[in-house]
Length: 206
Image 1 (cartoon, rainbow, N blue to C red):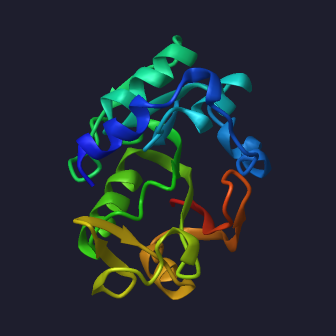
Image 2 (cartoon, rainbow, N blue to C red):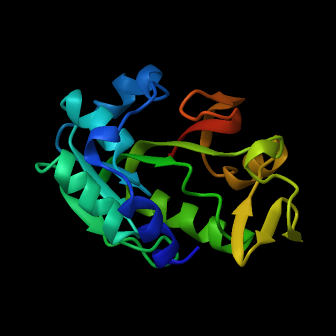
């Protein structure tokens, strides 16, 4: 999806409306394992997860394609560093730079080959033993577009010129084939008014 699409969405949000759910709560120990390295919040949006991490004293860098999203982060969290980036480009961080990566609903907008390359980049910037914690669309997420539009690849749909991927367990197991998979769980998300079904993954690099 284009930067303008996301800018339009986040331009209408206010810092005061920022709220998070507690999906990261079971992983506080993993997120706090290395105070010398930051957690990268990839596709941070208005900063829901960055706020959660900041409030718990965990160093975080908020990253997003949308300049408007990063403005919302600065308004609410002026001490949190922000980086504008495109996940289709190499990540602007050195090898083993991050203690962990959080990617909340930001990895399901791409062709399979691009998704694999993004995961390779995440592995590169993670320290050995570092964790990727992410949520992605489920194929049962019918309230938010599963099965709608033109299917370009298994689970990848194009509608109104925008791409959105919906995952089955087998696809996630293939995507994380080089990782140690601690958790793959499909469940409703409590953040939205309509029921949204997503996969939560907690995976660790070697």
